[in-house]
Length: 212
Image (cartoon, rainbow, N blue to C red; front, side, top):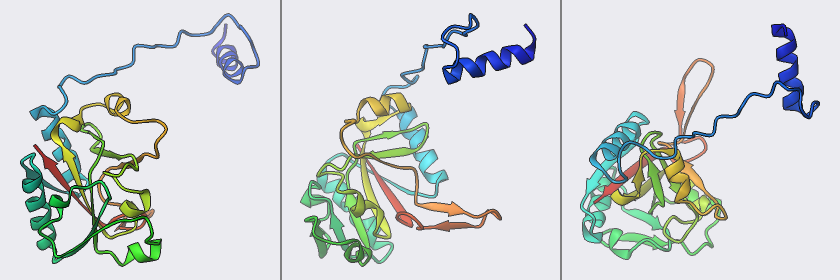
């Protein structure tokens, strides 16, 4: 069979034009489903931090208790002169307890209302170190999607045990029936001349508190 005939046969097979051309190639199923490093290990944490910082996110380390997380959140926001925040309804009060202008999202605020909120604080479900991606699922801890996309600054808490190395490991921890938002650094885009613009379709500033 010539190269041309083989190519056309593959196209027909892919299109479903030939039930069995006799030239179907076996599909490899040995997908990589786990990484070389355990979730929450030093290696995956270092990789996650490296990816996030490469994406121009700010990474803050904190101990795993709520008081330490709250101190890290307050310090990161104070450095930016931000004292008013809105938290996802499932976020512990101690994460924002030292801030004077902390409110809880009750789901009533419109996109225009949220645009006037300087910063939001949420948790997360899982983070993938290889891609530097944080997953939110719309649960009370993560908040509704508008809450994390409209305000200019997003403070997201990632707990160490929730950091995995690979995408398959991350997907295995997600509920496929929930709305999933994947965050890889601050919102950014660029034109054909590679002029980078941040904050176009999401927060301009992403602060990740890695807790634990």
